[in-house]
Image (cartoon, rainbow, N blue to C red; front, side, top):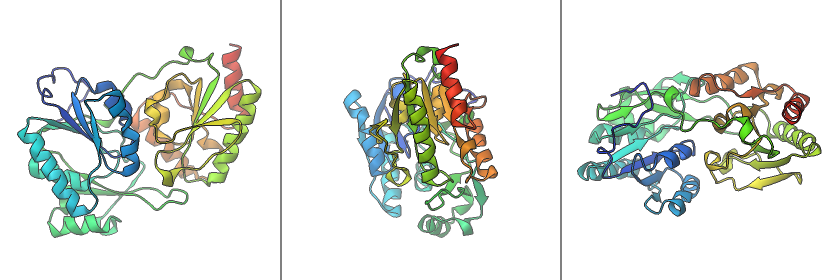
Length: 340
């Protein structure tokens, strides 16, 4: 069942026994925090160890929410999720999932058990390449799907090359059971981005870093150039690297104060004057205070730059990210706020 608008009106009775959330990235963190009461969230299952550490912050803020991680292993996870969903179904609980990353094993469990729940997609795969199962890199998962004769239930995608990283593969279920209330990705906006006027006088700039299709050194050079310029104008700079250690670029500079990278960017204070990055999805949470310098990365192909912008537009049509072509252009933005 599909909904065209993100509205949770009238579901209070449905979630009276609690909702279990399955997360594969930090993208839904703000949504879970803001909708924890509406959905009566009682548990968050994080797919990796570093994500479990990120979402542990919920346990301190909301003692009723328990955070855990599934066991490793393809078959073991299939049995785990099948059992989890069976128990939730018997208890009248709902399951909520977001699929920021591919989780075909969980999808199979949903197909088998047919629990009641909600699908709040975070992103689309518009910038990924659709492929045949023969080209799917998740060999064990692909072998299992073929063995079970279920591979036709999925569409298969491959990410574009990321500097220093292997390509990521995704298997996406073609259609969820009717018991799952699905929302379109474009309707997913966990909160209204704050306007510049709420924080323009705080003189704080946040860097959201992470690997891209350009060399890390190129990014680091630009971030340092921005830090030099911004601190000269009296701004304080902060950096929050990617939650996944494998995607961090390791920016270190005495002008820039580091924030714990395991804290989801979506849960940071919204009091920054500007938030700077390249392709971080979290930029979308900061409205017209978000700045991307993807255009400045000369080593990145025009095609990859276009796909980066297309990803933002598909995730939040009409977003207000500022794309700068030089550090001086960003300086002019800072001065325009200082002296309107």
